[in-house]
Image (cartoon, helix red, strand yellow):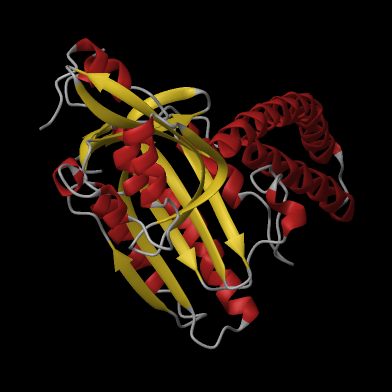
Length: 361
């Protein structure tokens, strides 16, 4: 039977630690949201099913579970490779304890995703570094723009007073270069308009991006779509999200073109994830948009600074596409995650999902 925990249940559902409760037949009788996220499955597919049926490679031996029930022998294991039947493997810290509830014995299994915990700490540090770098650039940009305006104005006045056409060409050149530097500074500062959020369909945005990159004739690649139709409407600025996804997709297409992969592929995937921690804040639900390519991968030496302005792994890249994408996603309280190795690169955009009515708060 499924156990009713009342308010204790609400506490356990909000925990980041995955909790799985088994009866004396080792069947699942309770899972919290973090456990569902780890299993990548729904509650109806897990409850009342043998726990070990979901795992492979004897990652947890039945004899150990038996000792918990029969002898009260608790066990724990650090950095255990937990492998699921769908082929996924995650590194976890696992603890199994005996619980006695209403004269019945249960096994409570606590699973902490080691990689996820480390990633949260790293993301928090990287976010703080990015914010510090962005503020530094913002301050320098304003200091540069002020004298640029004076230089341009002085050149313009001087040009009006010079009778010689050849000398006027020099003042015109000064104004053009001042305008070019001002435009570069504006690009460094990134988008400065507030998002115009409204309820929108995420897949319509992704499909517009697909149409744009498909029209690019400089490289031929296959596009593989894998969409989750259960994602509800999101409250977002569709133009900003489209630009962010497009910047990443264009980077992928350029990487495929430059590396001359035999069978270039760009994948567009959407998913929902529960209990996402973004910049130290917990979100109950997030929509995920992934752009995947089979190019050469991102060099390790630039990964930690890849979202900084003027940082790029391409020979002729401006280093602003990912920085702008990050700024646009920041406007939605989201984040961009990266996983890359030779032959595989995946950028994942996390966009918090709010319920309708919360946008008025």
